[in-house]
Image (cartoon, rainbow, N blue to C red; front, side, top):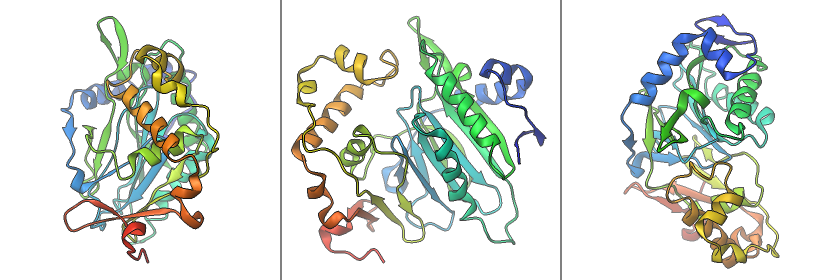
Length: 313
């Protein structure tokens, strides 16, 4: 079934400009969303989603109240929610494998929305990208819209704050107006957000993506467990030279949008590289080829179950 706007099927747009011209209310919705205050989310209720990750949960989850992700420049943050069950899935998509990723996102929500007593519809929120010179954002925007059109379920596009509708000029340079979003799983509220805490296992998860890891489901909502890996990387990565490079060089070669990255981008890249140099073998990070598991403690922190010998069953 198609992607719907105001309960009507939409044809595949030739451009994002065409989409917003045909549906001016999407422009207004995007402006309203962009004008909302940015919320600093309490890490004790948060599950943070990094690039090429997704996670889904329901209002019955006692470990996670907010799903969130940020640091999106040309990347898009993709949220699908079922209005009946309240189940929601948030993904951080970079265009690496859009056509295979979208079905995973939809399935993550529908699999948590099988109670016939909780009738509802699937709603889609797209946020991210900007008017970048290479048009990377435009391409990802169109691919995501096309991929959702190909799903068998009816999916209603509610918020579309993407590309030119998420573009702002800062000192003459184009940048994304909204870098991050969160969703309150209990209420369904979606809002611009920032996240000082990006764990658990921030550097490990970044290393997985840096070394070519594909989109991964990181959360089991039934068990309240974050699962990372296992993944593999080469023990002979020639990456140490990046640690001695200046910021401009790292931005030029390791970013899709050098003029729009957040201030901590370079340090994040260097921390990820340092992690890989300190762990040249992925086997040491995933003993016996087993994933790392994290549970929420009573204090609200994520605790590594493997280190402490805790059960994840």
